[in-house]
Length: 460
Image (cartoon, rainbow, N blue to C red; front, side, top):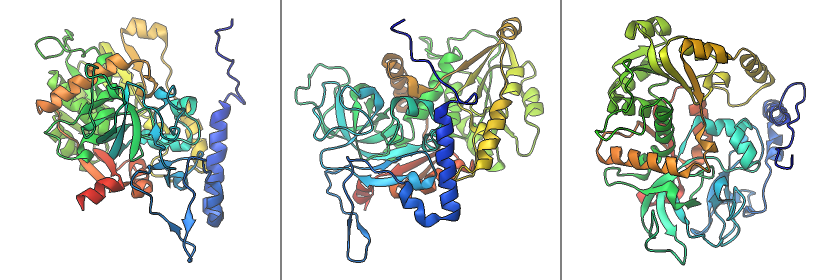
């Protein structure tokens, strides 16, 4: 009895944290719409932040020392106003939740003592994912569970090793030295120009990647894609380099094939010898999907998605990769072949697209979508000989070995030039609100990458 988790309480059938997030977002919407001058009162600060100094005209002076960390902090659920670019006090940097034995996230203690397995990197670029928007809304489960507020979002990092442990062992695995150019993942904290990261989550940037922005476009989405293919039975690969799967049906359908994860799913599926049918939401993305390697591209804005899918693979699909949610899940399941696997790693259509603020109407729409989400019966799964699998890599803090193995495989494919960098939309980190607006619009293709001011200063 002592080891049982605390009982979860619900109000009107809803998680209280979701209700609080809804209330906070609605307050942000009301203030932004009817009293925008009051928005500054909705911006919580933390003691780790450097207090702002104002000039005679009342404007804040932003001239931090080069040794000080600048990051994007979110103090509470809400709209774009919560994306605050702050300077941290001397000696403090950001940190992921899986190294809370060093310091509780999102910030380290001043001049933290580095454990043997961690380094501090001067981060030059980080990518923006749709998950970051759900973090800001207060709807991302792992962020709520492991970090809370304030939080520094972001998973992808690319930069230079700035500090290593004083007692670093020369024989340790994944040894890094000051000055090494590295890229990798952190479990939150990436929206920052300085971050503490476990070495096992980093790799040296190969010579074929010539910018930090390109390096930052790889880690989280490529790891997500490869783990999805692992669940589908295609990884680890066999010794000959191809897929280990012996199923006769080699057809895979990939939703959002021109997106971040979708683009890597297309490329990896072709490496593994699969017949790839990619789905895109607009004609402007057809070329990108074809250039990534799709055998067939379905533009659902101009043709019936499922009629085209049936034509492309009349016997169904061995795997369907779906991050859409309510709009496609049921039909995706119905179009699996016997022994097929539906792999779910997101619910984009459940969430608002193109809305900077979550109004009361948006919350009602989301509640309606949740109410009609398809439910899969265990008996039907058995008699239909189909599987439904879901995952979220932000919960994988303890699964370092499989993620490390996958990162090594991705690095090998990059070095062999089998994986190419997706199209990048590059912005300075000061434009983080614009980046969130763009990815919420559903019109982005490839990856949005933000560069820190240090990277831009070097370029200039």
